[in-house]
Figure 1 (cartoon, rainbow, N blue to C red):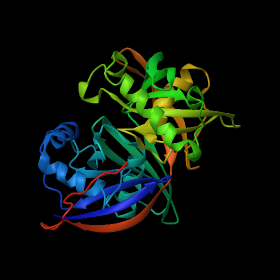
Figure 2 (spheres, rainbow, N blue to C red; figure 1 turned 30 degrees about the horizontal axis):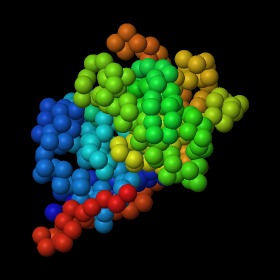
Figure 3 (spheres, rainbow, N blue to C red; figure 1 turned 120 degrees about the vertical axis):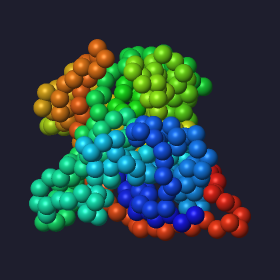
Figure 4 (cartoon, one colour; figure 1 turned 60 degrees about the vertical axis):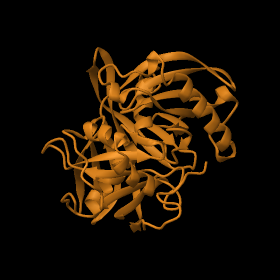
Length: 335
């Protein structure tokens, strides 16, 4: 196996973009290809090789570039992490937009905004990439519609009973104040935050609140968002969060699809009003800003179109190799 990849980080969260060496993944759509990849030992060898040690780590993240659903998008992507394939990824969409502009995958002008249109398992998304004097300065992830699934859902955990708000932002998330567990979103509480996030996810994962109303492939609690309310800025609400997703993986960024899922909750609570901006900080101190681009109706639910802005930077180029006599094969995960 010989695989070429380009690595980026978005607000501290890694994103490994596979550019060459991947076998063709069949399917009529990106959502179909995700199902195929999940069930294919051959395809999954590539994910494991790239996400597991010694070439990756337990919090690695990345994506396979695949054909789009139709000519309306520039390309498609299958997002992956240590436990499988996700339905959406905002930080990855931002990284992909910057990569597409910086590597001339999508033509751009030295000054202005270039729209990079990407098909992902949850639908069609867009990265609006801003350049000044030939350099990328930021990118805005415009997501599929987000909406509230359920409020104040009781959750029994080994750390006590809490209530979770469940919402959708391309994936289904449970939101709980970190203070409900006696914690703050800080590196000092990292291990306890992971334990709390995992407990909420697995307690809710098979409940009615975890079911997508239209597409069962999108069902399941993808992650738990533990947050601190930091009051307000002149622009709007200010919060800090950590998203614990998959099985105990931690997003170093403020989480793009998770931020999208937070917006309809804040709108419903009248904490994010017309024209305001959510300032969303991460556990490592990086930042996204988010606004509501529009209101939509989704299967009888009031939804919003979220726009999440952040930065992505290239960190390396790689050519990964797996020899037949490698004693650890595609690798291992230590948590």
